[in-house]
Image 1 (cartoon, rainbow over the protein chains, first blue to last red):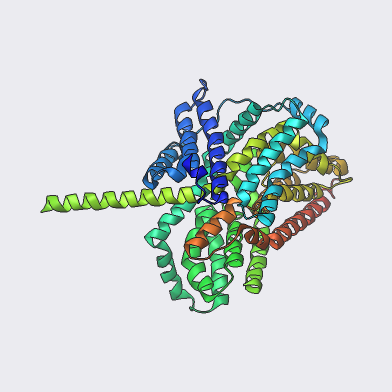
Image 2 (image 1 turned 180 degrees about the vertical axis):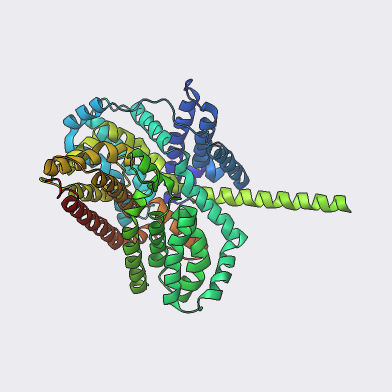
Length: 314
Length: 202
């Protein structure tokens, strides 16, 4: 409590912590609710996952880093052994959502767009983090939905969020885990190793060559790892930093476009199974790679476009 | 002596282990913003409950005399815009299969009376391709999206400060171009298949 009263801590930091505590409550609700689902096939491991996440989100700031690290490992174990399973919250019936659609109509898009809108408003008009704007947008959306239909009681929102968290499952934590992996790689000096290797291939001090190598290494590494988030930290530290940014290129443009160059790799790899292979099963397709085949040309054109963009806007 | 080396290794190993745990903990706490989807889910589920998918389908259905390629392109526009607001309509299982596919096959049936199997397979592939492309390139427009946050924290590690608004702005031309490329390619491919696969039957 002293933290929130302390006048020395800036407002933005306090509001962000409030947001993280709210996120912790949502994740914690999913975990505790799971504990009470007697028919759940994997009750305790699933609860361990969501509750550890909740504690990290809500109290991460005040816990010793080692403790947080241990909690992350505890959270990852049930996920790695695939014991985090969806619960028994029933899905919404088509009849119900159809009836609500008839009642609410296109107004439903107002709360849908509110999170993004508030993120932009906060980013443009305040010095407070746009993430806090997202949180405000969520509250506004909740209020609007409660006004639209009296059936939308507070409990409904928590039940629905648990159902959705169940659907996305531990995969949703991948970006944060990959960021942590990237941090370990950086601390361990993997970036320098890659930089050493690359310096043997490309001439140092040539920004154009550096950009092209950076922009092509991203999708290649992404195809191997199956995820651009896994590639961005290592390749940025290894190639983007020493061969492009150190020469004075614009970090915002180059750094961000490198990520979306990586996405071209995601479109082309079976390693990104949940995007490229799972849909084949969901849509009852005949060819295992027919989603990828429809994406390769799009990916190649986008990569060329982005390399051109980087070279012009560097 | 050997015992001493053993003890030293254990101590070193333990120190390294603690160091790794600290790095993980530190990175995780610093990147908690990436879990912003947790708070967004507080409304997305209830939006679905209140008819978001039905209204999205109705919006796409407004196009008259649509071909399958046009249905897919229209879905792409809607998905890209919603992705920029970090809202998904439910992915392949939640939206493409139950909503986009019936609309696309309905469009083919209206024109040819029947749906050729090879055509159907490609329409499925293109729908999934549109789903992925617009999601990837739409989400980077969301200010506070996990991609930009990861880039920001990576660049910070190298000593470069960036802000989320600028990072999102960089992606605007890419997102528009991605939508145009995927929309055009799929529209043309569908038109070509529609012309070649049915000519002998009529």
